[in-house]
Image 1 (cartoon, rainbow, N blue to C red):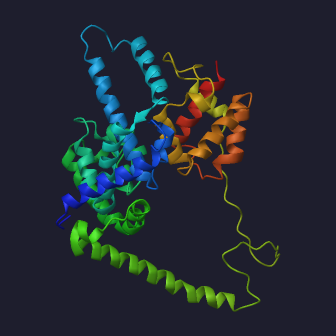
Image 2 (image 1 turned 120 degrees about the horizontal axis):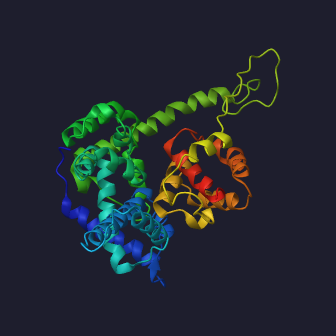
Image 3 (image 1 turned 30 degrees about the horizontal axis):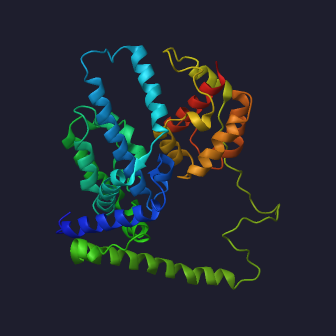
Length: 363
């Protein structure tokens, strides 16, 4: 970004935003939980950056624990026990206001950057990854990226990109040029922040940013206005059905496109796939799904499989908990969620979700 950023305004805005949000939430409350953080503000990106920072702090504490010279944290039994403990702990997040407020400030500043200068933001993200593990870092953190995430998620598992930070930074710039027209509209992203506290883009980045975004918004409005006469023309023809809705009348003389083939989950195939798990601690350790998923899994499933709707995920988990077998659970998921939510049954997220379901029913 070539514009001169007003860092002082950004800092003051973040402080005021965090104070306003915390005043509203902690009125009569002492703690906030993980699930409450997901819905803390109208901006999904702010909420997920808060969670991301909590997990970063969590990993720092875990690193300190593992640095003890008196215990072997590489032992598989210790690793399994520690993983299970951390999963349980992740579902018991309780943060007081004096700890949360500073985290909200940072999350707001990062959200503004990813909305207005996503290239620089994601280049800084890859620079934070451990040496030689950028791909793993992006794969682990993609669940926290809600805005302009295509700049980096499309790079995951691209073997030809190399492992150097410079290679990823260059790829992010190339992605921006290729995807610019399909990236999230900055005015729409900033509007979610404005629902809590109005942000002045001109004060923040001058006319170069504020004027450019105003032009984008005006262009978007013009496009919408250009569509209206076409809709009006259709409406003036009484013998023409509204093309925006499917007809309920069957016409034998009109060609009808066959419905798209529905991809469904296969219980037998999934059982064969997950039965190959050989390491200890994976089978038969889950109780109620609605209580057993780790918080980071809930974030990923909410974002990738349930359209960002945490309530829908909770409903799905409770419904699965009520059936008696894995086969019944698969049938339920096929009937209610696979087609309705457009799942790719071969995706990493779907397979991980079904693995958790499998672990609940298979002893």
